[in-house]
Image (cartoon, rainbow, N blue to C red; front, side, top):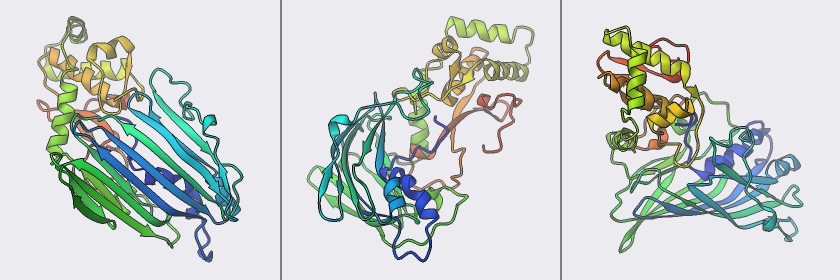
Length: 384
């Protein structure tokens, strides 16, 4: 899994773009530098877990510095899992004139920092550059995105609202088939349910038009800020089971895997020593590389493919370690964790809580993480 929170809400993505100006805002200012006049999202979920979302935003800049900070907006997406279509984009001038964005000039491109990893990353971005932006102007865009389901017939989503960002009117509607029972958690966010003949719509609303100056926080905003989470997973056992089903087929003990396990443990019959040697081999020989190809954020590769590549992310490390241990009759299982600054598991179970995978060896009652590099068996990084 990627070593960063899987924040799925467009609201947080936008808030991050303006937060630098919000955090340093002078408390004496009559209004925040950037005001989100309107932020809406309408999501339609299909029975297979795929969904389509139309997001609309209207962002008012109250000074020149803020205008420069929001003069362009970046939309990131996975080329094989998602699509992103700019339906409208324009600058609304203070005098009422409209300056349209030339949408023929918005092309898919690689996000910053990913050019050196083309084979590991299918992330793309579309950058909206708003024309003629100055103080008192409003930047407006509407974006349609489609998303394949990372877990079949399951849906999960969420939004978090930083207290230091000015939101005047946020409305998010998520419509699911009635057969997909959804579990919801809200904190500081309004929630209503509207039932149709064959569907259920969850409506979330939020407003904070005059926020206080925000202080730097040590905890994740998901622990401290207003948010909503919606998920069709009934509990965390179901999340674990779904991941286990996805990963279980990747740990086949092929002839090459068996031969390698035998070679690594050739001169020892001590089972703990065998486990230690296999762990050391994976730590030393499999280079850690973040993989964001297709469903790579959640689905690991097959053990034999990882050996062929000599690289993999945390999920791949756990798969290869499990396969090699399995070849010697030693059990292991993947463990989903959050290695960041999020310390509370919401009651609504969501895979988005987790950003890292390590392994548990029940025979020795040990948690191990072969991505930790030179750490000895059973020694975990402090963040874990």
